[in-house]
Length: 109
Image (cartoon, rainbow, N blue to C red):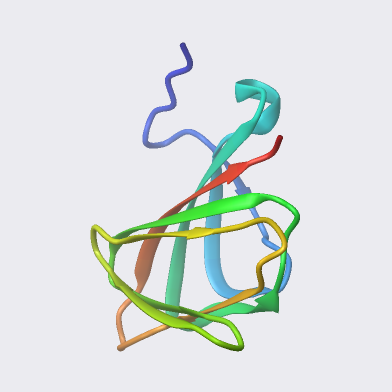
């Protein structure tokens, strides 16, 4: 078992993200195939359109987030989650004038 306290983790900068503070709570080295990040997006923060070779799941803790690509757009609120397949493009925009907190789970195998 691996326990991670609220105040534990390592700050990180995610590529192609802006207006966001991220803390890596669990790394793939610790869990063998999953990493979990806690991200606080500021108002007007987000991420540029890009793809990753890894599966991602975003779980919204608070606030609102728009996740979109060329053909889809999803509005997410607290309690919502979205699965993004390997290679699938996505961009993120924060809605309203409030921060958005999310957990991002990345399957690395």
